[in-house]
Image (cartoon, rainbow, N blue to C red; front, side, top):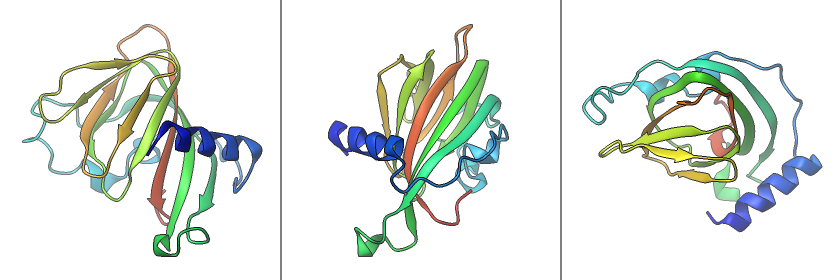
Amino acid sequence: MTRGWIRAALVCLAAGIGAGPVLPARADSKAVVPERERQGLEHLLPGAPKETRGVLSVRLLGSTDLEQDFPSMQGYVLRAREITVAPGGQIGVHRHERRPGVAVMLEGEMTERRAPGARPKPLAPGEVAFEAAGVVHWWRNETDAPAKAIVIDIVPKDLP
């Protein structure tokens, strides 16, 4: 994925191309990370938080079916969500399975920790984190202000 791809995806979604309805904000952890991605990771990032907490909102900005442009992508969509995390909030440890994506920070700051090593990597507005399939990581808002990001990912149609 390139920065040009990110820009094109954001432009298409902002223009409403393929955009679905805007759903009510959801703050539950399943709206952020699928349950199956949160299982059995203790050995990869010892001490990483398992629970997601402090998520203020998850808003679906839109999605578009990938099958029309890429027949081999049958059953997958390109989706964009806006996720807001409260100060001290976190996205618990998870492994991306069949869900590559990119997170673009809009406001505030989130700190990401990835396996192996889990060295903290703060991301400020305008910075990007690529999340390839297989990535194991977690996020925390270590500031005193809410953090907001656009998360664009490729997901199976049946994923919440």
